[in-house]
Amino acid sequence: MPIPNLNEDGLLPEGIHDCTLEEIGAQFGRFVVSERRVRLFTQLGELVAEEQRAGIAVAVMVDGSFVTDKPEPGDIDLVIVLPADYTRGAELPPFQYNAMSKAHMRRRYRFDVLIARQNSVEYVEALYLFQHTREGFEKGILRIKL
Image (cartoon, rainbow, N blue to C red):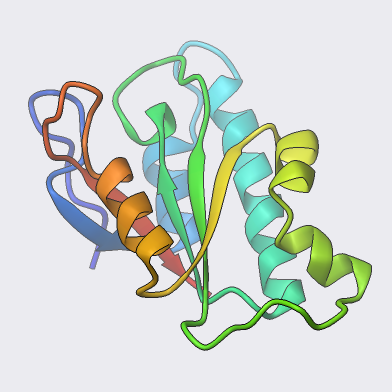
């Protein structure tokens, strides 16, 4: 199902909207008034590829001013979704460790990232946060299934 049109407030309609990286690029990753959207989308693509290579995450939830009608978005906010039964503790190779490191994501991509297991308290809280504006109004977010 394609990404829905933005509402009159320039936001995604309520809900979690499944999409592909390519659909995000077509709707939000094009030149508007500068290369900002193009650069952010390129970085998002690199992050998604890193998550796919690591093979742990099941989805990436995408939010932030990038998925609004702002011509010059400030950033992309993400939730890296891990399987519900994933347990931390095993020693991971560096490429998998980095794919789940908030510090690495911030340093490399300059994105704000939350990492949560599916259906955990952290996951539910992150989804609630991402699906509301600062003023408390409901809005939608995007999900790329990996």
